[in-house]
Length: 239
Ligand code: SF4
Image 1: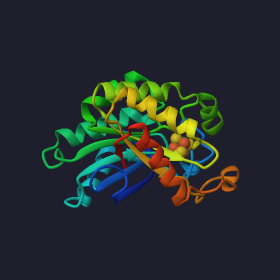
Image 2: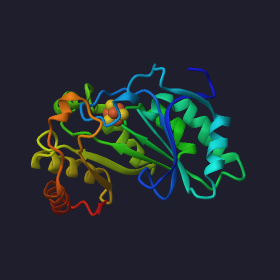
Image 3: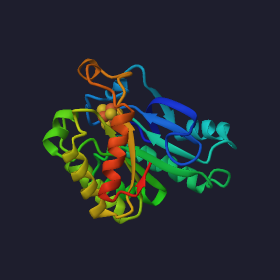
């Protein structure tokens, strides 16, 4: 990867669902997980002719074109931290440019990044939205092809430096939504922060690959059960 450039899968000028406020969102190409439930599997390979190479300067121009309608910039993926040096440069440029430095800088991550990556990003990152696929490592391996050890370490570390904005749970009926899964997840998160912000995302089948296409989407009863169970366990900051 060339310095000052990123492989980008997509750019969205305005989004209300990728962090607080209205945000410019950059989806970086490449992921270090291979989730069966991935809604954007085309973003997984790092090398693909569909990706576009952007410089920091290219993106600053695009961000300026979205102003004054945005309150911040979110970098998502794929897995954003696979190109963390670029994120660091882009966020550094935002934080040191007078007409841009009011914008908040957020990362949407699967959490599969070591502590030194988070340490390098922390000075220029306002918050991280982190996906926890499932707490049980065996299930995590089945669902993503990888261990969740680094994800759990990332949650703890980011919370300890006050950079964890929220933990996101994509709940998939019969895959990661048993009472045992939800209760153990709630206990794990509350042990780190009694006011942990948790966002529940309902699994849908659009965009997923063959295996997950046969799974049931999460319906309104499922969502109510998830909410009730988390609330009963003491998760107060539920979105
Ligand atoms: S971490 Fe996200 S982008 Fe990567 S494979 Fe999983 S769902 Fe897809």
